[in-house]
Length: 248
Image (cartoon, rainbow, N blue to C red; front, side, top):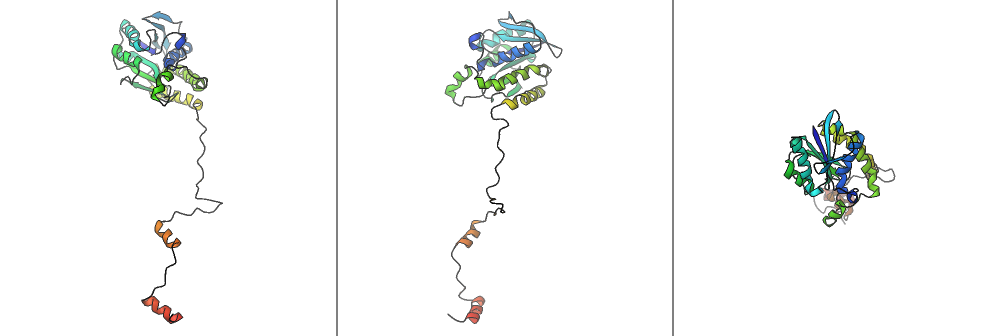
């Protein structure tokens, strides 16, 4: 048996927050794979079903983000599962919007929900980090994370959630690379600016169809642009010039 836990804050006031993308992913998986209606257990909303032939418990803690580990830990103890059976989906501020990365273990990276899970569930669980982008200013982080997704974000958010649900079988089967690749391919066309890159401009050295002039060294330029050199005053060349033109 496996546990897929999506992180977020319960209640309609938080439903569209960027911080709740883990809840959104869990809901998408439940819909796509025909899980029964959510029920309340372990101080969480839970749904038990199967994905790719594996028994899976979906969990959405109702303890609020900072105490997520309490609910997930209770479910793990009830089913006598270790951290290797746990996969957590959550928002990642330091990943670009729509990007997904998976790792096992590691630090909390400033995420209070993950910090709580580390305390209650052990550190060696799998982490599906879902990028929500950074606002670019640390003073705006709280408002960004606890703010609603903008309408324009739905262009990549909806395909992302669909792709997560469609490919959950790869996730529960342990094919992390395959899962991330499928997500990237599904979301890429919908990310801001994708596919609109200008072609490289032609070289500025070529003008009017003429062959470009190669850059010359500063020594050669000085010889060409400086004043004309005076004729030699002595030596074999001077003697030859005197015989040809006479003495001045």
